[in-house]
Every structure is written in structure tokens, then in C-alpha cells.
Amino acid sequence: MDVIDLNCDMGESFGAWTMGSDAEMLKIVSSANVACGFHGGDPLVMFDTVTRAKQNGVGIGAHPSFFDVWGFGRRQIQGEKPEDIEKMVVYQIGALQGVARAAGHRLGHVKAHGTLANLAAVDRATALAIGRAIAAVDPELIYVVMAGTELERAAQELELRMAREIYADRAYDDSGNLAARKLPGAVLHDAEEAAARVSAMVRERAIISNSGKRIPVAIDTVCVHGDNPAAVEMAGLVRERLEAAGIAVRPMAETIN
Image 1 (cartoon, one colour):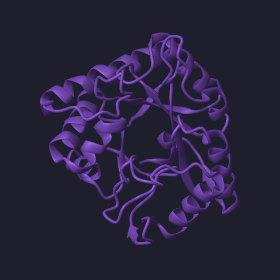
Image 2 (cartoon, one colour):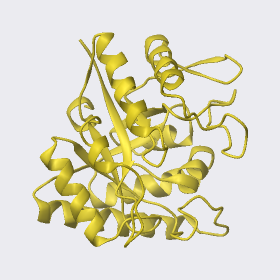
Image 3 (spheres, rainbow, N blue to C red):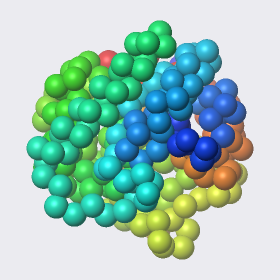
């Protein structure tokens, strides 16, 4: 039987501000990418998310970002040196690693968030900086990468374990990168459409762009963004379709060699 991971960005609430439907999503997904305080999340939210993930048998990973709580980590940050990015990522991984240990759970992976991830997908120095941070904290952690990008090449160069990811709720351009959020149709809100696209990409082992172009890639994990209003319905339908096709959904830490 084929196996794949279904992941979601979580723990992105902050103080009195609530983001996403984490409790519901943790009943569906197999891995959670937990915000570490730089774009969302705070110590209480981090502890709660990790504890709930453990209770639901969901694997956890750090979800580091540029330091941009105001912009939710999606604003362009200019002038950050790779060595500074490396230190910021080490800091965030370490924070969640400590929370996980205190909560009796184990950190399994690292996935960059927002603009940091988008920059690393096309910029080798940034992708390597994130990878070096992972290796410095724990070289057994899985580096979650966008398939076919500088992120994947950095993980290969640094000989890190990696999980190649596609997105259920985002459209792709013909380069294989995510379409810019400002473009019409870049973010999918229809659960049926998203589930059909995921099923096709997993079946064909390819990213399918907006124009219909097929870009062959390995696929280890599928992401549904937790801040999408349709996230719960979408994740549930994606999982249902994958399992109906004979594909088991398991945490990435159990499926990546």
C-alpha cells in the first residue's frame, strides 16, 4: 500500500487572537507544522497545540518564519543575511523542541512558513541557511521542501532527510512554484476542486500548473493551510479521496527514511 502524509500549519493563534480550526484539523491530518512565535503562536498556544497533537497521534514539526507577527510572515523582508536567517531558524526550532519535550512529544520535522519558504524556494543561500539550522539542532529532523525547488536541492546537498510537499489549496505556475497570492485563483477555497487536484497530482506524481502543465516530482506530503476558511472540509475530503485510492495517511516521521 502507498503511504503519504497530510500536514497542516497550526498553532498560529496569538494571545486573544484566534487563527484556524486546530482542534478539528488535528482529527484529520497526520502532521502539524507548529508556529514558533515569529509569525503566530505564543508559549501557551505552542504548548496547547503540541499537547493536542500528541493526544491525536499527530506528528509535529517547527514552522519557522521571518520575524513578522504583524504581517503573519507574509511580507517581504529585505536584507536579511543567510547567517542571520540560520540563527533565527535555530532559535525557533529550539523553542518548539523544548515545548515538545516538556509536553512528552517529539519534534520530527521543520517546514518554513510564508515569505521565508517562498524565498528559499528560489534562493539557494536561504534554502541552505534553513538546512544548516536544521542540521545544527538535530540532523535527524526532516526538512520539508517544495518539490523541484532550491529547498529540495539544499536538502540533498546537506544530506538531510526530506519530505517533498505539494499544496492542496494553492495553485502552481508553469515553473512549479506557487502562484503569487495576489493573482486570481492562487488560493483554492473549493474542497471538491482541491481534492480532485491532489488526487490527480499524487496519481500522476507530478505538479499540475494552472495551465495544465505536468512537472514530474516525488510527493511525500500534502499540505492544507490551516488559515483557509475551507480547511476542515478540504482536509477531510482530501484524506477521504487518498484513502479511497488505497493510499494510507501516516505522519511523515513514520514514512520518510
